[in-house]
Length: 159
Length: 143
Image 1: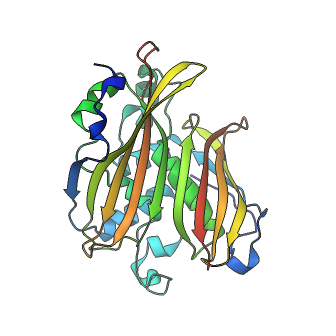
Image 2: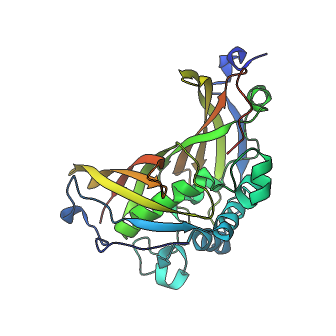
């Protein structure tokens, strides 16, 4: 089987759903701290109360941590075994994540397509993690584009 | 870690115009910094944490996760507009951001939406050689 043979019915089908334990203050602060964020609304509960959100919130790109349990459906994973790399990411953000929020991530594939460039054919798969909180509010849509070179190309290291 | 900022922070909707440049931020992608954040985001893979491990994967050395470069561009936007809200950020990872190097984060305002009080921006990460290793666009709601 080749990448081109993957059944397109996989597109749009939910292949993973994961509800995370409540998000903690430590998780929010640790993410911001390791990134080098200095704005206290992402670091300091007391200072954040006086900020635009009235409390501590997660730095917006915290959402990329919440990738679900299964990276991709098996029929796609089998064709990505020679390595692929992260070609890009689009995030659409809704309400911010706050301490105590319970986030559910549902995963679907939104696109499978081929492009031909100077170095040969490249296959792209786009995954979406749709994140909602315990109130049913949209937290984020995170679209990740993975790329793999065609079968005749030399192994490409993953990113 | 980073970094230097210009003197244009504190952007508000009423003070920005298309064509305005975001203040340049210089970020040192120190190996420990990249390793720590890669681990934090659940990507403690050799290519992101270890120079030799990355080379064994055929890479020139330890690299920065795409998710981290995305986050750094968000950091650039919010350093420019504290109190602003990033509504959308889309990026294309065009090249490697090697750990142990210094990169620059740059951006430009391209459009202004009066109704939603948002601006569209082009943002990018540039290596010391001037290569745009990450490019993107963003929608930011400004205070």
